[in-house]
Image (cartoon, rainbow, N blue to C red):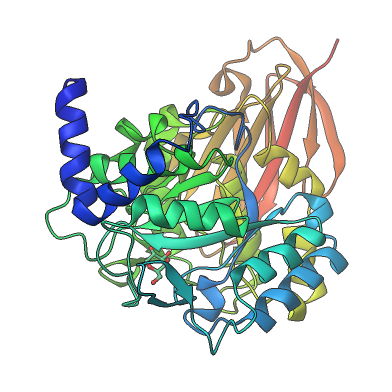
Length: 408
Ligand code: GLA
């Protein structure tokens, strides 16, 4: 901690600003202090849900959200674990005369509370987006100076998840700015998952476990296999290489977030989407779908709803997988699973199919161990063997995802 308690309070007051402080003071007598929500049992496994940004950008309205809620139920996504439905940027209108944020009256004529009620009635949880700066990335009102007021409003609307962005923050300190919204959320007494979207700039993995439940580790994802679209937009392989070394920081309640899924958005092949989804599961990443759910094809549904890959992502031990070997385009990844199994992901970044071999010692198992190898995508046992295993013909840009279960 940089400040002592007094310094901390002083910094908080400065940053909240006069308006925020006056409002806070008026509430202080009526709202009891609460225990921190960050450790209140939220996000004990990586959050799963859907977010509007990757497919729809600013083109959001209440019909889209209702249709998406309906189809999250009818497609089986809700029952597969996708519980948070999050509206990203551009839901906002202006602040009213009291400074209270309003929804865009043209796009959300029924208001956010009615929409949250609709989403809740479907058995889903409701999420929203704001920004620590003066404006969001798309130029809507940010929460700076209104943190407590906005948090109270979100809680009154029934918000269960807040994604909090980092545009237009000038010289703000990231740790202090996110801590203020953390305090404001705690003040509401409502359990709200707090998603830090700071793109990894201030290394949130070093400090954010006491602040939020997940933190972005990279710039934005874009719907392509590799490389960058421009400075801030990264293909899937680029993100994987940035997020992989951060494996020691993930734990139940606190996750590295390599950004939302692009599965189904059209820029990659079916094989590449399977790989994207598998790597997110190996990295214990939040699984926030970003596609058009009402128009999802059966092929895309078969990826997003794959039970065994979802179970891998949601493993209760909460350890992030890591790469243990890289031979040119061929990689071996390992993840420790609750109960002593290992998950292994074999990745082929190359242009032609390849055989990929690995030995038990690379997984931290003794060579003499007899184990059953299960292929998660095929949902079948591949072999019971000792010491090593070879997956044959791993497709170009494809994976084999295996569970290694010690045999008695
Ligand atoms: C940033 C975030 C994205 C999205 C947009 C919205 O780029 O990283 O995930 O929220 O802002 O404007």
